[in-house]
Image (cartoon, rainbow, N blue to C red; front, side, top):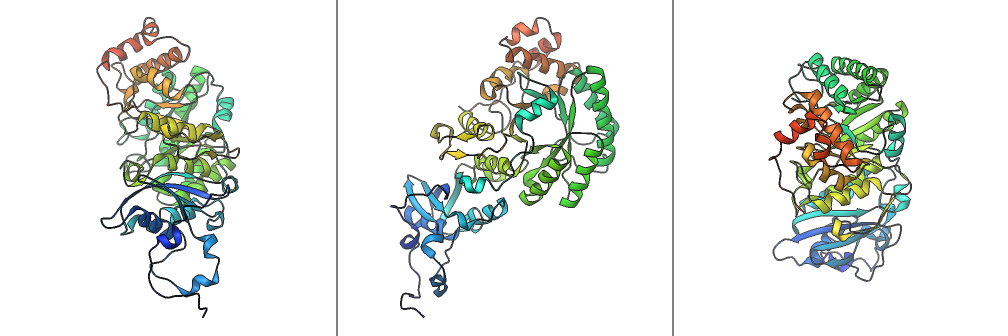
Length: 444
């Protein structure tokens, strides 16, 4: 045994706090918001996070001598207030594996006693690692090409009520929305294959409704069929069936299914020529708390890397939580080739996506026609807006609600006001009157 080895316990900061370290371009960088446990200072808490998420254990071990610990250990290289910046060597991570990244970075460490609360605010993945991921199969531009829809946001609507409808009733609502003017409709996150609506019947009748709407309107229409199931094998079976119906579109609950299942679904969808609309169901369990969990911007990066074509991002103006600037930051991460560090938008690091295709940002949750001017200010044209209640809640039904949303969107995208558009569209005028006093809190 080498004399260098000394058994015992010593502070994590001795090995894992390296303030003179200059991060390499190949390092994976993390920004953690840390609330140390009472009696633990910030430096020691940050070092504990670095240790537990890389090479450390609670005591000195002789086997540290069998590797280059100085290379492989994570390094706390900067602390600013309650934010600790930690660098991880590229070789700590398996290629094309978000599962491995998550097991390391957000695995054991969130239960560590040295911290009272811990939040992963941002992550910079090096280009060398980004290039091992597939990214989206289709992306924003290619989807516009095959749908031939330009110069405005694309419009969708979640079928409501989201549970309880028979497959035939469900298909009727799809048809009404599509002939009214929506580009697509979609299943909701918890519509899978319940007794009242088995997936095969719902997919079949729904796709018939899509075909009928396309024939009547002469433009592309679609429905996002939710292929999420209790096993990856079953999800893939449903995916194959959707493709067999002639659809180009499916939906997947990527967080509840997990990133390993998502990788399989995204890969097979690409082989079948399907676009995958990703619902973020369950995200708020770990993204909503301001001092503990994982920020949604990190999840957005992971989703783009793994291959999702669409991602729900929040709306700012709707019913779901999400501030203005933070939502803009998430939108940037989905649409830009390179996103510079932007503290105002919560982006702690520059992120180069190494040529990966883009992901559509999706606004959904409590939005209606009067939100469209703000939505356009936030998202611009390259976005997907979903109006569920904002379609079906129209006094004259889903078709009229869809027409109101389509007319309002085209008007705002072309520089008109809603008031101008409503003069020639009674459906829009009625929607504006109905929801004129409906507002959700907006956080700047």
